[in-house]
Image: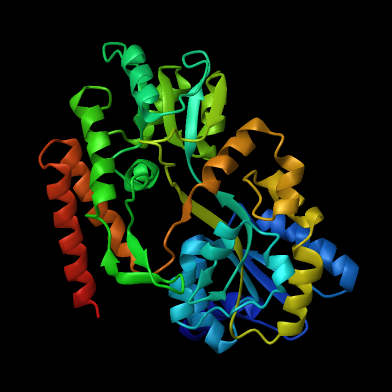
Length: 399
């Protein structure tokens, strides 16, 4: 009986690997639950056109990034993974994904920020399909016209803020740094510097850069003046937004349906200039990456060039998961949507979120510093200098 149980267990363990194994002449795609249905439809049309079978397997994002590292060298990985650009650095360094060779005239049809995001060490490792970032979402009933400058934003915030309701004129999710990065970056703040070839210089940590500190001072002043709480969790922000008690917020397209469900008259605009400088939000990019161990390089190239990089497919992806398309010919077809266009305009001022593995060390250290600033425990320059030194020490210890 024990032998039977062991045999059944072994079979159940091996079946997923067998089903997911790369096979010459057939394509396999791994995608998460949001993208898998989209790529199943794309795969079906490719099979109809070419007769080449394409299987799409739904997996969690964590499983995709973990399993491709171990499964691919053993021939049990996919041909493609659908994922975020911040996977690129890690997957390149452990040899899981391969460079992608696209003609220059095709590369030029993508938003340059998305190509930069999917590149590492001067080589392209993913073909993007969407881009996302934050902008200024505002309630048109409270803020009929969006501010053009930071001073105007602060004045509107003063007029609308009444903590007894509670109502706020302006908020940003805080202390997590992603949403407030446009404020921190506008005057020159950065996380990692760049080398001449465009790669990130990990010896140049910018958490205590002058621009970062000045941006943190702007947030600190809002908190000191009572215009923003010392902490703004997601639940607080979305609650105030959907209830109509928030005039403006820096957030992404994921907040639009939440606001609209609450009956908010939504407007979206680029984040206003700060001292004449454009805020630079982080840009997140999604796309297709290629397994370095795939035996189907010729089919992969055909799939990419003759099927995936087309208006028809990119529009299908957009319709099923609305984000500004990275492929500019497709964006031209949807840019009349004022909300989509405003997010795209904001993103056009942005920079790709660093795709180096070391970024995983940054977030918590950076958030701790922003927490200290928010609760008035430390001044911005003190908190950010300490964060910079802490990150530098950890990175040296990991060398």
